[in-house]
Length: 217
Image (cartoon, rainbow, N blue to C red):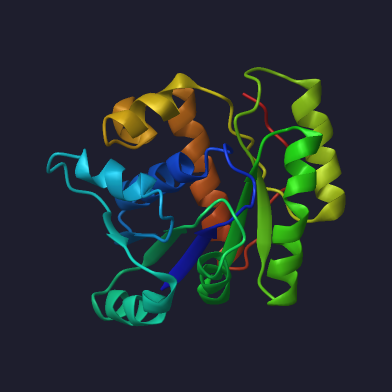
């Protein structure tokens, strides 16, 4: 069972919407997927309540102290991928998520403020000896010098997912309707980017080669 934890101490990076869309894309791929919501704001839990019986990944909103037990239950249920959404602050919940993760993803917008704000998260992950990658999210659509520059900076400081995700209304609209972006419009650019991120993350966890060439849609 693979575990991806979305962790960052910077709010407003699109962490929760990215987590739920990645989980939906994994289910569509045939992976039995579950979301754990450790964030008191309950964004993933509220998203799940808006799904209106459309199936897909379940969301379990729990406390940090319940995480180990929940992981054991999900493994017995045959879950293949767990995606954990954490608070946008440094809390025991974020630490617990890092400890059980096979891969920690740090969403960051292509700005110096976001990159600097991620530094404490990187230190926490490194201290616990867990693999991580930045994910450039909410990037300007199209070819952007800002995105390219941020990508190069993050390459120097650690791994960065090869697909930046652009700022697109699909993410906000899908979150509001209890969908993933791959459900809302299967052929959209947002859907393509999420599928590419999923493939990249799966390759990373399986130890396969994963390119670092940036592709900006």
